[in-house]
Length: 121
Image (cartoon, rainbow, N blue to C red; front, side, top):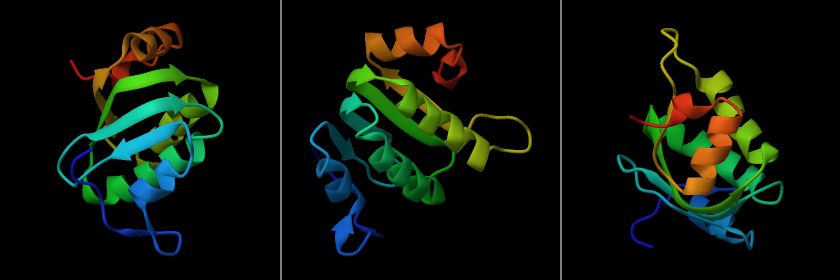
């Protein structure tokens, strides 16, 4: 999967290892590059995504997300994205998260729930 973050996350695991410990989600991220998310974004993997975003936004804001390899996304993952926007929102209203690549299913769901503004143009 390439380079990944080596900052400590919950004990002795790195952020990537913690995410991979959920069977549906993989993360690949190095500061300054888009965070690549692989797999399913659902209630089981949303806590790992939230923790990874919390860690990554310290290093890179706005944070770029590559969701091109996401095969499923549900409301819990959308809540994670909205919570990050709310928690780390910029005073000028600029998005904190930019989805630089998205799978067709992610694009469709974001469009349905009027969150398309997160997609980088």
